[in-house]
Image 1 (spheres, rainbow, N blue to C red):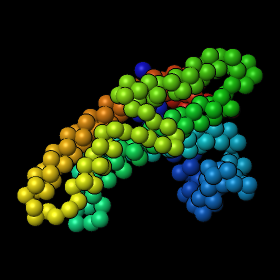
Image 2 (image 1 turned 60 degrees about the vertical axis):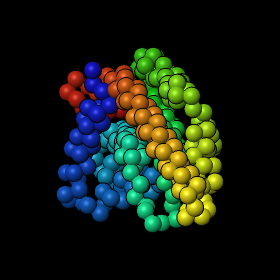
Image 3 (image 1 turned 45 degrees about the vertical axis):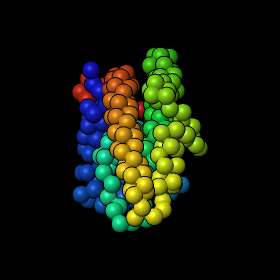
Image 4 (image 1 turned 135 degrees about the horizontal axis):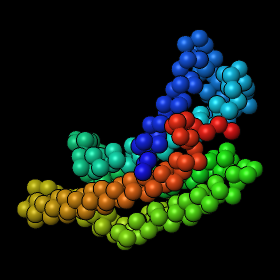
Length: 245
């Protein structure tokens, strides 16, 4: 099975073979053209016009793949961020940093979901045409349904409620309240004991959140491998080249 990593690598190689030779003779023009193409500007995409218009398909797919790659990197980087607190002697507290990392992680999960849908939409726009329309949609439509439900399922399995705008978490809320209560005269014995309790709670919650991130990432990897293995025969031919349109 050709999973996510192999799909991405093969697509990158195809685009390198398109862009790098042109860049050797017209670096400035290539920069401008790619910018026009990838960011939907109205200006002409001159290097595509000068060569083959069908090069547009692999480059557009590559752009969407780059967005997905960025989300994946951010999701796995969170496994490191959540285990370290780099802001000692600043106004940022460990509790607030923990919440920041975890909430932003979940936002990135949502963003990845949207980017996978955009990638699917592009595949349909490129390949679900003419005699291939029915066969392509046999693959893409179930994948749309997969993306619509799979991410919610892996989040729900961990008893978390995630929405686009808001996120509520009892553990993080409790930790924030404990931290607020702990502010006071740190010289008093009872206050020192309380601070020790808050630290113990913080370490426990951080451990749980790190475990959730790791488990969700593992599930996402499985989804991605299946997703891109299904799309591979549509996008690539037997010689591992992107099918031109």
